[in-house]
Image (cartoon, rainbow, N blue to C red):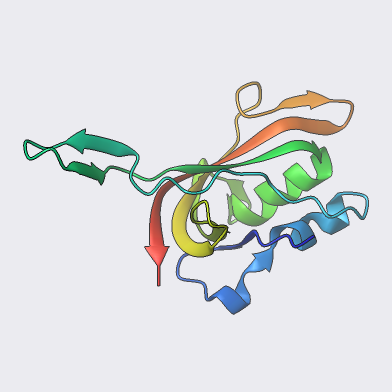
Length: 144
């Protein structure tokens, strides 16, 4: 099975330089390849009907990746590698992601902000694992 999700800290990172998420986390997942689950990016989250009857879409594009079960060591790695600046954990940081763009299983690269997951809201801790971890990406910008 191909795990095509990829990411890197900072914006405008070329596709060739993005790290495959499952491979990036593998040293922290007891050797398992664990990739996120996501819906395709909703490129028109706000839709409105114009007077002509045509539908117009716009709005801020947000996205999320879900890990049903992830060892805490992998969550710590995500925070250390993607949400830390000068040894200080930040609430959001610029990243480039490669994620499904639409239902036809085509992937695309986006600049976005990764938000620090909040315990109790974005995940629960059970016996050394983060359960139902949600990584939230806000204000996606498609890179061509």
